[in-house]
Image (cartoon, rainbow, N blue to C red; front, side, top):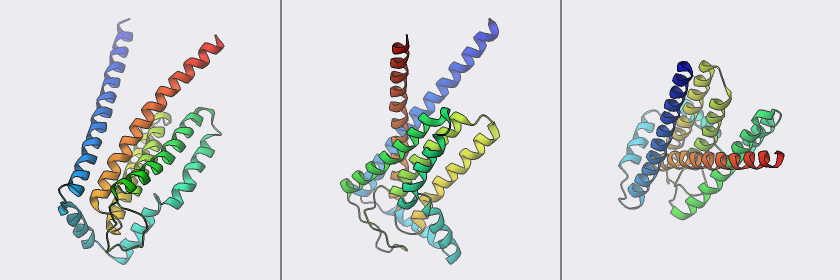
Length: 231
């Protein structure tokens, strides 16, 4: 009985930590987005953008430029139109991953739609000195926002399905590094300001947390309904 009580207390402590981390992340991202929007559209402060452009310029070379173009591709429209459906197709072959597959698809698609709506609302032009020709508006960065939502939900899948601790952490670190490099590549290529990228990260993670929360609630309602019908 004592051992069972200790296990229950450990589980409650773990759940409490998880809830605290989620709330801190949620409000941290919300404050970051509001701060970035204030800096860009109210204060008109370009210090951060200029500092990151100077940092990227010091590391500019033909080799690095090709590398950044390659990294940027992993959150491009062409890539995200193909890969999430492929992930869903692969997951659909495994019974335990089908609901997770739906989450991947819905979060990826909805984050892309939300990003376009937000860009039309803020209407910030892209940098005029971009290294690549890019259409569309700038705030928030679509690569940062949609990329963080897509790879973020993959991190969620990893933590739900990968049991081996080493592989779980390794995959999480690799996906997190990819998210960060994608954002930096947009600054390096001068197709986005740093404030666009940070706002994109913030909104992508916000949307990911909200989507997972509401989909989990729907999942519980659906399971309860099925259990009532089978009773």
